[in-house]
Length: 280
Image (tube, rainbow, N blue to C red; front, side):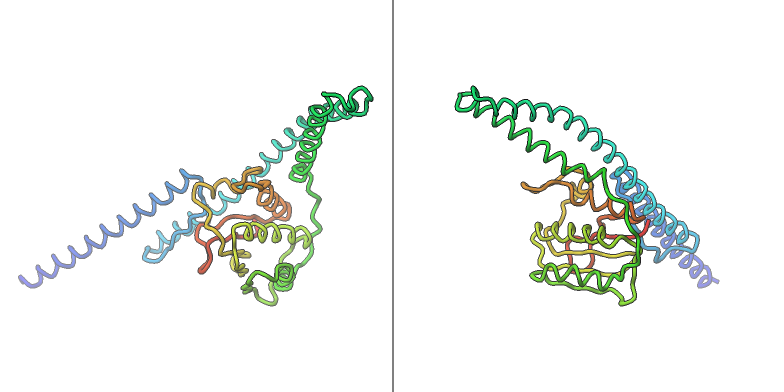
């Protein structure tokens, strides 16, 4: 009788310890998701191993919900930046065009040529021309052409991109029959932008893999955490000569084709940075 009672106590104690540890695990998961939402990072995807079937189903739903929220946020941000860019470029061009025209007219006057005023007026003219060219380059953010969708063989496409950059090492792991419904020319621009970013980050190796979409990885510099949330914002750049347009433009190009571009929270093995291209 004593042995039976002792056995019951041991079983209950073990079950209590297991229950307590399981509750601690759930609490940690809740904190991770709470922190992710607070930092506007909806890319979390927590494992379901060790969960009961009901908890597993709930975690899978939360994982999927996080991805959907991330896509909606990205789409909303793109629309907002498009509207802001459209307004800013319009206002800047309206203010700059008269300055350029008037300064050009003064430079053509005989009494200005060779005078002490010529250098200053020429500086104004050159600056206004430069500013107009700068603004014109950003109009492409709001004036993208409509995509011509066709079936693109992704292995052949990836190999054609790799051929443009023979100095890089390429690891391509894409099935022969994998296809994507996309505008091939616009998709090429996205991949070229990603390659250029990788080169500027001193990457030597590019990896292309098939997963839930296409994983574009490189071994360049790690993107700091405080920068990761900003990289898709138009005009944002950490490079002295960067324009801050590449990633934002790439995301917009893909969204016009029903796809998204996001930075993976966990890079593919062997790489420091991974971008994911997938269907919305």
